[in-house]
Image 1 (cartoon, rainbow, N blue to C red):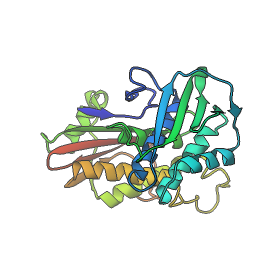
Image 2: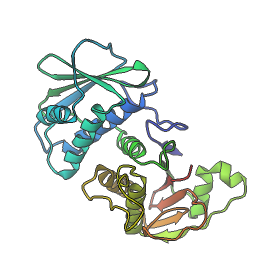
Image 3: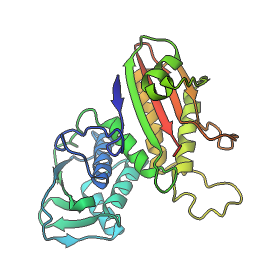
Image 4: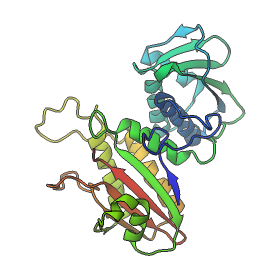
Length: 299
């Protein structure tokens, strides 16, 4: 089966394409690159052209140090034109990652926008943004890993554990959701676990993904005092767009006629769950292909 994970998955890291083939992407670099590639995909054909050149393991050269989020946002706005709220949210998120307190950022002189991003272990990523006849497309096969990378960077179970997203694809050669669950959860199946699946609609799955995002965004509840309604996820938050895109990408590829879910999939925000939540799994069964989506909010 084909497995797709994020570029930052601690246990099953997805292999990145060139120019990063054969190396483990530094997590801050993986997040910035994923945002860039998704931004290219969302603006291609709709804005003036631009291209990005990425050089991993670059030298940390002298340049203008940038720490201000507003300055980074303005620099990206000059080089990365966008149309629509989703692209704007992606560009805003990219700026916040580049200006993060966990990385160092320098700008090199020249006609193109050349940024040096130093992440963990002092590894440096050189990002060059330049004009082009058209927006250069991202590498093939990067859409789902990029979506999962950004979601896992944004959504957390607690201070140490991110919400984990993984996807498997395979040809439709079995009709039962349990059979697909057993193939992708061999360790649990070997223990004799047999989860109960219930039918889901695409709208219910969409609601569940948005509620997972609502519960996993630490900054959303930072000022909540525990009384009244928990803050809602803004429709224009990048996590909302990523959740929509994840589902839409799966629906477009598989074109499922049936969806079945098990585990913690909070279709309703206030649904009761007295027991320790089990990882959520959705099996999407299409005419030719099946997808298995795991959404794990357990520690």
